[in-house]
Length: 113
Image 1 (cartoon, helix red, strand yellow):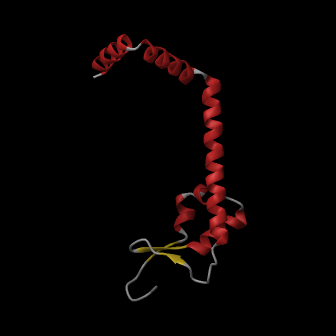
Image 2: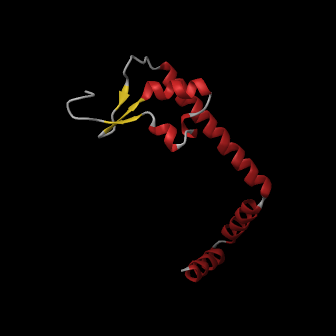
Image 3: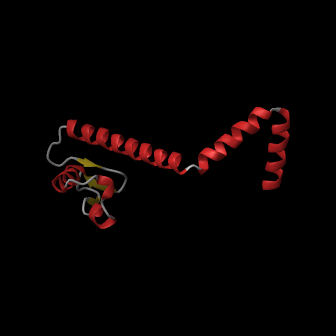
């Protein structure tokens, strides 16, 4: 498969030398540690911005007592989850499995409705 791809690439390079130059530039950029570091920095910044937006959306919600999200047979105590994370100053995504499961309940038919 790789050999076939390499042969196709060579044929493309013969048709248009600019493609080969562009491919070589991309290869150099992908090997450049400074570019990799900048990409990681931007990726981290984008994740931080997304998290801030989600937090702002959560803060704008008006939680009543007993607010639940009900995915199938489980329900998540959203308000408790939000308060837990807020008190500790941690993002929801950083909870380990045991911490996250503290806020998940199995929905029982006839109850929790």
